[in-house]
Length: 248
Image (cartoon, rainbow, N blue to C red; front, side, top):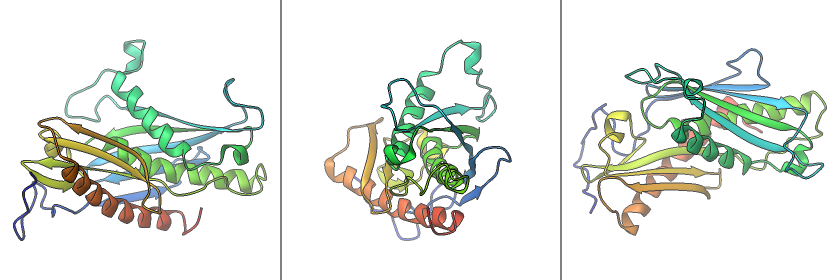
């Protein structure tokens, strides 16, 4: 059962239970990418770059486009050095799972027929990890994707943007039986329950990943975590709109 936070109760970093970390989205961070965004959520920093290619995978029907993602954590993004995946000659299973989530989430926002025979790859490179890297990648990755779609229109490759809606992502969890929004590493590392939530601007769910890491959790607890995520995603949506000039 979730405990109710005492009035004025603060977390390890001084936040309220339902408060996001400070978030900053810096669009057009990279000079060469068709779309890019540096997303900072507290001490987590992810560089998201969207690249346009004039080809599609062989499994895509003719006349239709594709959106995919790759995720990578730099060797010193964390407290200890992590060997590069190339040293193992295969992708880290965690990275593979995360990039599939990012790809699915961002693909949901795109009308692939209107995208035409273009492939947009969003590379999400974690420069510094302090919890929430997958959801930060979705939030920043959408800004990069929107800028790449805008570039296609400006270059007259498309008549209009193929985007259907915004996409944001945030985490929530239960720590010491308290429900908290946007866990940092210190909280995430001891969370009893961890939940990642991807939404569109209507507050509709795109994907939920919820795990009872320290204990099982109830449907009522899940709903409380989703309410926290809905609040956080609404705030992230406002920041995306500001970064993109209010339109996609």
